[in-house]
Length: 151
Image 1: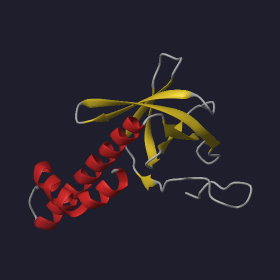
Image 2: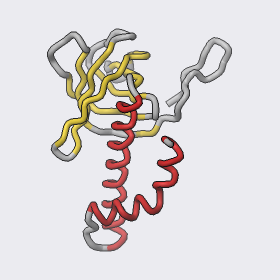
Image 3: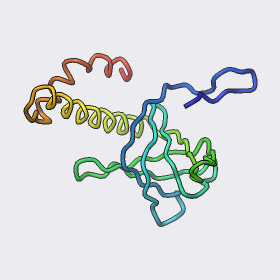
Image 4: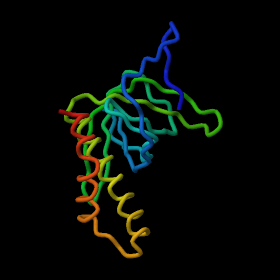
């Protein structure tokens, strides 16, 4: 996805985005219904998802991200919305409201990556690897990089 540029041809985005497709529900803060969708990508500062409807820029929205029978609730603010003419859907970019919200999403991203790693290692090993074993390997290999992002 191309970076957003300011009027001087410089990128406005602060954080690199990473592909992450995971279930997501969102609700505009003053509404009662949640819309089901998926994330498109995620960064340290926010995420992007697709919506069947236009969401007003500046709106505060509640996100719900399920993970292993638990629902993580995240507050965010709509920063930009762009209609995709090919799909008719809106790409909605949001910023996390608090550091805690950003950290929750980063943990969810890491768990999804560990699960992908578990599946890959299971194929490589020719046997099913447990999530716990995959987590241990993942932490040994990648925890230093994760720590540098947040401490």
